[in-house]
Image (tube, rainbow, N blue to C red; front, side):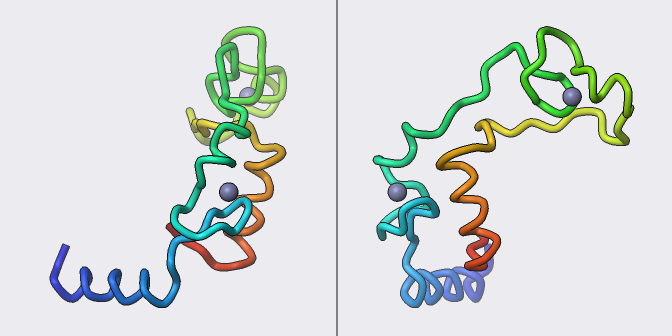
Amino acid sequence: MTTLRKLTNAALDLLFPPKCAACGREGAYLCDTCEPTLTRLERPYCDLCAAPASAGICSWCKAASPAYNGIRAPYLHKGTMRDMIQNLKYKNIRA
Ligand SMILES: [Zn+2]
Ligand SMILES: [Zn+2]
């Protein structure tokens, strides 16, 4: 990372301190309170879209044959995770 980039990031941290994307508490993009409320995706899940599936790929992927051949999200998209994603989208938080 260049010095300019470091400075820019430091300035951004000062202007926009990291805030929990779920509850808005300052200090981290995901605070200790919210992190355990996320639902980790555990197998079995679809090898292609990571939706819950008994084995291999889900019926949707079997039918649709999506153009990608594997994505993985570490958390299930509901509850805290959905709140976070909406906050990220609408508040323009990138990190
Ligand atoms: Zn939080
Ligand atoms: Zn699938």
